[in-house]
Image (spheres, rainbow, N blue to C red):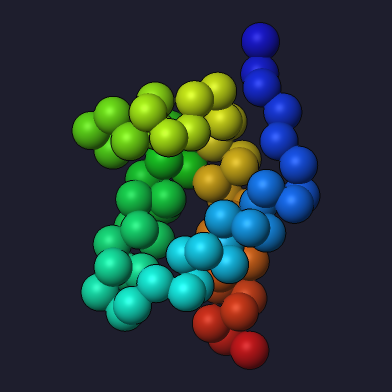
Length: 70
């Protein structure tokens, strides 16, 4: 069973990541890249994002990348 998520959740998470300072933001983005590929990031996924599919992390990254390019 795959848990669902909303576009609002994706946008809020992306906004929160974009508001982080440079080094912290880069680290979080790298974690999200790994989780988008199925990684757990040493329990971060299970603790903070239980049930979120890989696509959730990919969707957040897409917003971040679009924002950084623009």
